[in-house]
Image (cartoon, rainbow, N blue to C red; front, top):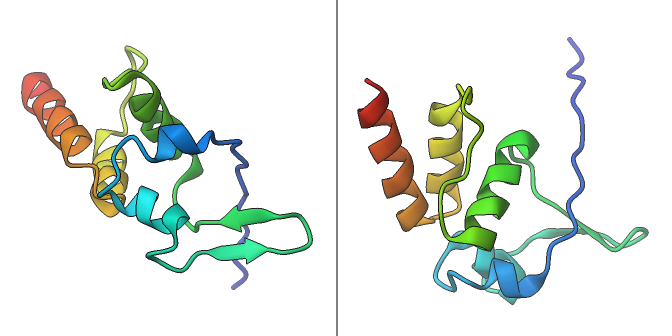
Length: 101
């Protein structure tokens, strides 16, 4: 069975990525962790949830959890926040999950 997926592209300002320097996301771009570079397009490839990554970037930009009122994928977002080792975001998501239950 073939898997068909999609690719999301984000233009990221490195100052935003390095706002949490001990996160895995920062370490991917500071050279501590290997990351795949598409040398033809000069793009980095991270095989993660692109839809959730939008909310990760918003957290990095605004230093708060900004989600639409009807957002229903907190579990996925929590997994992504844990993957990127963004502890503050993990805590915010967990608080949101508790408040919704």
